[in-house]
Figure 1 (cartoon, one colour):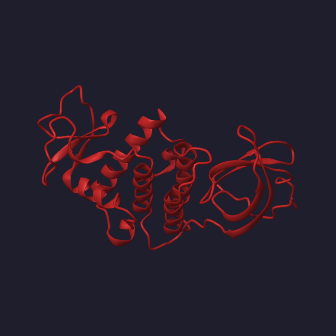
Figure 2 (cartoon, one colour):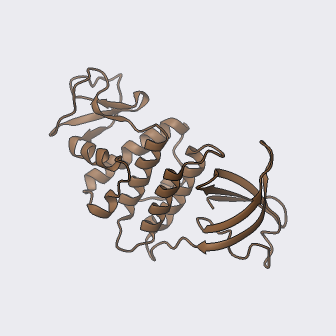
Figure 3 (cartoon, one colour):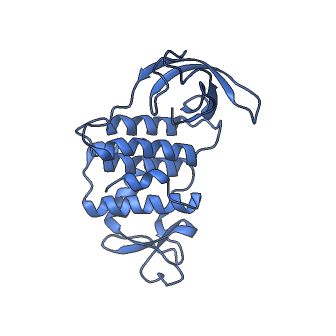
Length: 240
């Protein structure tokens, strides 16, 4: 479950992201009662099995059953673990379409939440892995192979600018004031390329340097912000 909102004195509207149906909202009657029909299954970021009645387009589905499979358990004392989970839910709400199933996005979210619950995992790497994977699946991941103006192949040992509006990078020769963008090193570009590979689990294999963490996250956030027209609200709670 990725969102919930009050509907009446006893009911809530809950939003799920499922493997089979993608993102959808349903009315959970009686969900606010202490002894409601759904027990404790309807917690934010919980994994649960549900039964619901699908309604026609433009109307809420009706949730009839929900049983808890597992609960998101952030690492004790780690705010990045806790708020990282909320950030993932925020991105699923804002960057996915209703009733558009995407099993790969579901897998990415599940893997990220699992890593954020692991005291041995690095929260920042897990969050960046999810950002990059989600952008790739949505067709929003920038072109990291060549300059967006002259077509020069990107090479090591240089810094580039991220040209957000055109979805690519600029080499130092083509970077102009009118092509505004933040700098990103060739090392971070290489990391992003590996992160964007199919089935990548980079956060389990390497440790990002502080500079790579900042540059990769900044590039992902700039793309997300450009698409949404605003920064995700939960982003301000993360400390990288």
